[in-house]
Image 1 (tube, rainbow, N blue to C red):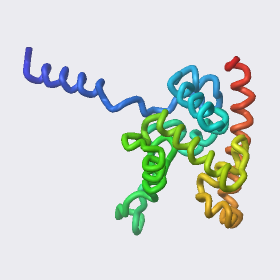
Image 2 (image 1 turned 135 degrees about the horizontal axis):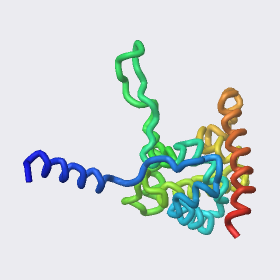
Image 3 (image 1 turned 60 degrees about the horizontal axis):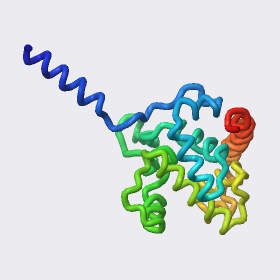
Image 4 (image 1 turned 120 degrees about the vertical axis):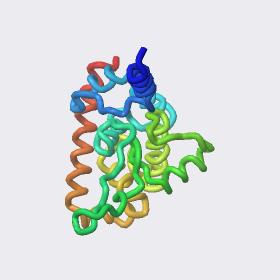
Amino acid sequence: MSRTLRASILLLFLASCGGGNFSAPRNLDDACSVIHQRPSYLKAMQATQRKWGVPISVQMAVLYQESKFIGNARTPHQYALGVIPMGRQSSAYGYAQALDSTWDDYRHERHKGGARRDNIRDATDFMGWYMNTSTQELGISKSDAESQYLAYHEGRKGFARQSYKAKGWLMDVAAEVGSRSQRYHSQLATCLR
């Protein structure tokens, strides 16, 4: 066997052992399609619903908005003068787009030092933890996807200050999250019996 052929086979083998499936499921507008393609997502969201009381439809709507269900999603790069790279817009990473500092708070409080933002089970547990605390501190219903998203995006202090009211674009996005959650809820009622 030639050296080139062996190197190609080894490279192909190593590529197939890669770090996981970070591509988005197809047909993201259909909750049933998403969970049929990725049963591990459903198991993770069911565990979060049992543990934290956050409905699957709310979790899915936030995951859609934050990462389109892509496990290694990152914020875009910023550029000075349109060409000089200046780093990313924020440290948000993973399915839930958790910031470094908030993720560290979660790992410390929940004693989950090995939790990873690119792991769906850890990401949904993080969202459940965050939304549960928003319910406790701010009185937001766990099924109110729109308000939960605003608290998630702005932080609980920002939500309490109503900082989102000065951001029309964010109000529109939160309304879309709320509508998507309702759609997902209706769809899931047909395939989760």
